[in-house]
Length: 212
Image (cartoon, rainbow, N blue to C red; front, side):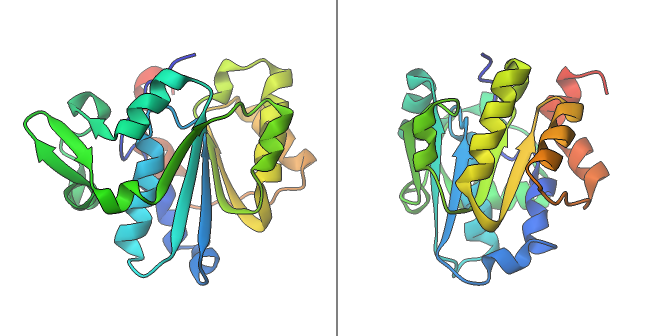
């Protein structure tokens, strides 16, 4: 399974927290789950965004992946230009990078305050034990289910839905679109049709790797 990942891949998607999903952040503490977190870029991006936009918000991020090697990188919290940090990130991305990292030569290290808000551990989204993840306000399951069979994709999706609290939000991307629509309907989820074009165009990694 591929582990390519970058910081700030799609800040347009997180902007929904300033729009239709803003009521979810009105009362803390907020619990966030990032499944299939790979090297930690998405988990730290979410944490950095929340701290930047909502400095008084009480929140924690739980992140997991099945691979020990990528979790070792996430726990170390030291990254390089190959993780999307050595490029022009735009005004918001530049502000986030400045507040999230300490720079030393070619390395960027996550600051202690942010590191303390994110917890990484090994877990398999296909395992029955994944049911221990529950009652999260925000659940992210992105860019790993496209590697699965339809049966495993459905099981993973079901486990992600179960991890969200009633009224919580599920962020799902990087899976077969028709199957995602079918699964969402089957679970009675309410799709959020908000800023779809900007979100689609905003993820340069997907745009570079897929023919649309």
